[in-house]
Length: 148
Image 1 (cartoon, rainbow, N blue to C red):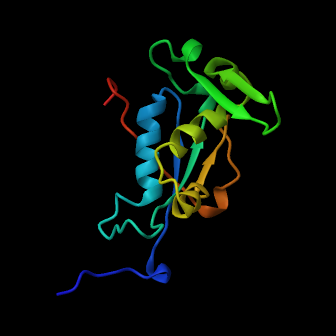
Image 2: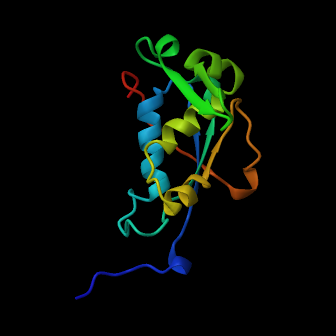
């Protein structure tokens, strides 16, 4: 009996809302990457973007462990000579807390066209409000260590 192969039209996608308050960045990012890839579905195949949409709110209240706020640095380059810029995680958290979550999840996704397509299903907001109420997202509760 052949393995059932879902067609793009047969894939059902849901919307999940996740409150990032009190969540550890890496653990949150790995769970979100798994949902975006669709690994939680029994019909998962690695060559299709089967994942669900994820909306993350309260990205500014995410938890970091150890000395990461002072030691971890993000690099970007303007592609001009001398255009290298380094920013610490603490400074980036004050300016753009949503970008920290996006970069953490992006690092756990495939580095291909398929990975970029999956990343389009991720929406991150610094505050507690989001404009995706029309999609009727389901609250997705990830148990926090110690509060299970």
